[in-house]
Length: 113
Image 1 (cartoon, one colour):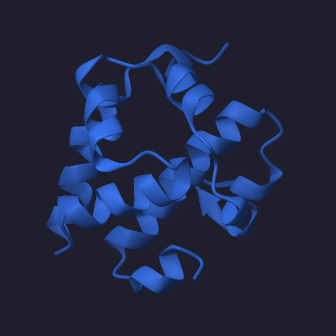
Image 2 (cartoon, helix red, strand yellow):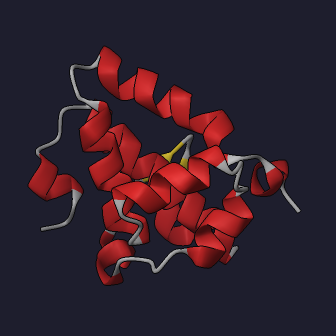
Image 3 (tube, helix red, strand yellow):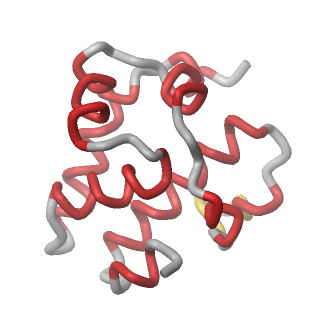
């Protein structure tokens, strides 16, 4: 089991916020991207962060967006569409969406809309 699986989402979330805000995007946009991927509304996302939910628990409770499979490309040199472990792939999907948001990609493109 990879150690990220048992890490809390709340321990990584501030890094996501910093990454997108450094590039002129907002926490609200980040939350929108996370909601799109997971199906969590703002209140549920907040609860998950407050409760110290692990990535494993986070994605077990999520209803992955049907268009998540349209997320392609590389994160840290790994092609997200080629990741074999289902949980790791979901984490990489999230990483890829955060990267795209931080790179200034239009929200409708990030959300595969």
